Image (tube, rainbow, N blue to C red):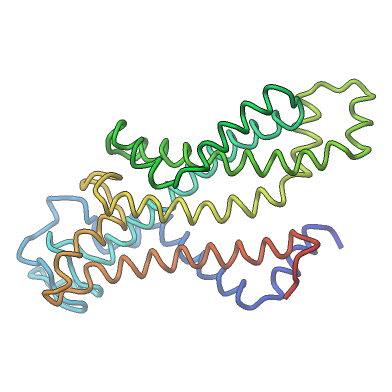
Length: 290
């Protein structure tokens, strides 16, 4: 059995993991096809009607359309707004994680391979960053950069890269003591070839697990920052903004404006964490197998 088939078989042995994977697939499909499956474009001002403001779930609008999850204070269909918000959350999570992974892994592998002053400098910078809460660093950066999708991606990359650098360095230090690395050095392969064609593939398992967890962390952090009014502007879809918009209406009984976006965010994060948890068990030969 090939390693890929073994991993797939061990992953499928957990019903909880399969349920998480199915839920994650549903979230990703909903985010990907949001513009086509949403009843309306909730951020097209020409299609909004204040007469439809705060309609309860299942109510009909003045035009006769059914709003299955109700509407918010602007008359936006909540189902459509949630789908668009999921699209933004998934895009932010995947983009920031990919960039942080590329930067952090490159620096971590370089630190492990070259050692010396470069290793000491990079790891001290990483230690300094990891000593502060991620949300605090993101808040400071966004206070300087301002709001916007690109700004929040930069902030998330800045708070994530150190995790990958530390993990990649630790894995590479173990791998560089093995015989295949000595053989590559004896054959006079270039440093870049040894790092990226020999060390990197053997350091991937813990990095893949970490990246999966960090996608959920990035989605949560973006929603938190947007809820606080420092993430995305109100003209862009965001689950955090939707939750924030409905927060003031909770006491008046309009629970759905905050509750449904919150549930969508919870399901997205839980599905990713369930997959990451099982992936960590499967890729760690010394870990518990359930």
